[in-house]
Length: 192
Length: 89
Image (cartoon, rainbow over all chains, first blue to last red; front, side, top):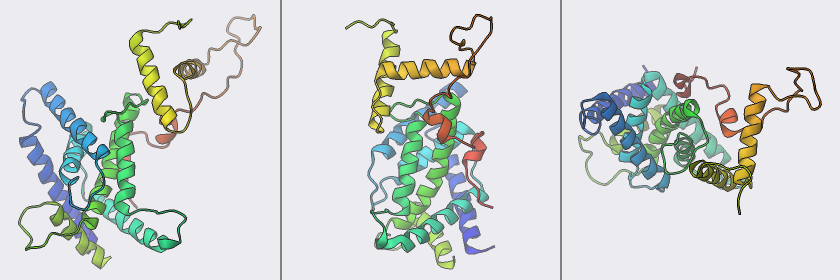
């Protein structure tokens, strides 16, 4: 198992923990399934709006809404990103990072960073999925597909966002927060 | 100003909102243009547009492809939710 595969396994386990935590907290406000589904949708729309209206920062402010959006989208679509999906996200971010570095200052316009590019795709997919305060013209099936794409871009945005968020001074804590995600992915990046 | 073709107020508001969204994306679209586009698209998909001057029952003319809406292009090749999560290799 190489460093990227190890990071993918760590992220898979970490995200399963996020899902489990959401199941036991914000999604658990009701026992009846229709109410539970309503709670999932409520968490999704509230946090999708926070992401779409939020600026890409370097302090990790989007971490919590992003986790909620990913968890709610996965529960709503019955998706469970496994090791392969996380590995693909890690490779995708590393590859894009290399491509952007190659383009560098020679580009005709500021190309942005991997996090900024994946956030743009995530924002647009969330809008198209009809889970923000902006209208969508898609039918139900295509809105579901848009939400699936939002999950896809969301995994990649999380990886890129973690890599671009500087670590805070001080000793690392035990918490599996954005800094923890960054450490997991950074080790894979060094080895790649 | 009254419209010749009347819509339910809520539906007209939907059209206004969606036309506004499309216009923000660079195309200037009025609510009535969007309504016409959606009707044309619906008829084309049904393939029931009668040929001009055709008298024979069931005669149809070749219809123009419907105006592409976002959903047609955005999800080209994506059929299931599972396909939305990209996996390399």
